[in-house]
Amino acid sequence: MAGAPPGGRRVITVYGFSPSGNCHKVRLLLEQTGRDYRWVEKRSDDGSTRTLEMLAKNPNGKVPFIELDDGRVLTESNAILHWLAEGTPFLPVDPWQKAQALSWMFFEQYSHEPYIAVARFICGWTSLDSPRRADLPRLRERGRQALAVMERHLSTNPWFTGDAYGIADIALHAYTGVADHGGISLDAYPAVRQWLQRVEATPGFVPMPGPDAAAQALIDQSR
Amino acid sequence: MAGAPPGGRRVITVYGFSPSGNCHKVRLLLEQTGRDYRWVEKRSDDGSTRTLEMLAKNPNGKVPFIELDDGRVLTESNAILHWLAEGTPFLPVDPWQKAQALSWMFFEQYSHEPYIAVARFICGWTSLDSPRRADLPRLRERGRQALAVMERHLSTNPWFTGDAYGIADIALHAYTGVADHGGISLDAYPAVRQWLQRVEATPGFVPMPGPDAAAQALIDQSR
Image (cartoon, rainbow over all chains, first blue to last red; front, top):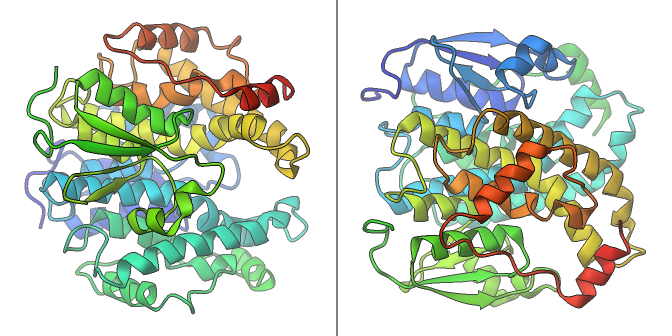
């Protein structure tokens, strides 16, 4: 589906934690563009991303990041999506539409992920007595504000990137699709729910792996 | 300095709050590229960005955003920078370096601004008895982590975007230069301090307006 990809036909190594939406974004685009890649699993809840070896690659101590076969590293999920999508149908050519895609991706990282993804992380990957759980009401409220902004856009537009599915949809799908893990219901957002279904029907879509049994048990007790 | 800018020679209207770093980023790039623009001042601490008229332009209720003379709107400070910089010396042509610029801009919005800018906002633009002040120790700690990542990069690189000053520097300068307003000292980050001086010596640099007297008084009482 893709034309000549950035970096030629190099094999890309992704360092990621499979149940992380930020990491899954990268996997989904690689799958949908048919790129070769190698996946190195690194949990982000047990210090594995902050070993000396990992900090030498990403001093910010987070996943995902990608590494090329010459050792060069690119961090930040949405910057990775943008680089991988350049020259493919997943990023529009029109500069204004490209800018809109980036705008939604910054919205995702500033106004959406810090609430919807963090609520999910607290519910599934912290203990039931974690003091972080006191933040959940505020996080859920702010998460719903982000969903309302998405609902408004999707009530008159099928996608976030111009008139076609693309990386802004991939970025926003990641945690919206699992908002209920953090106790945020999508019942009030019908256009968002229909858009999730459209995303999941795109060619080559792969779902994010579910939480493991321990995380699922915590999620079930956090609702 | 710029070539043919995106959108041709249209006049751009910026909606912004002058002492906001996110807003000042846009002004700085417009000044340094010599673009015509009109500035509409909207405070972000008194509901002025969430009126019905403003929400019709940006449903996320934030500034900055830009409006073209045909009414089209682009939100998110770093998406605006990226759009304005395309085809100018402020964004590299090389795809990998472009990706690195975006990576730092996502770092800024996720790992830097929510701590360094928010600590500053709380100190200068909330009352001395605001419950938000309880967050300051955590915000300052996370802000120092972001500065440490920047220090590491700047100890071997003069700029954040390849080998030239560009929009990643503009994005990161905005709140780093006023980190002390939020009670975060730069004493431990000499490479960051030298980089701030290099940024401030670039042609056409304009400083962000200082806080007004009320905000400055709050900042002085928050240290």
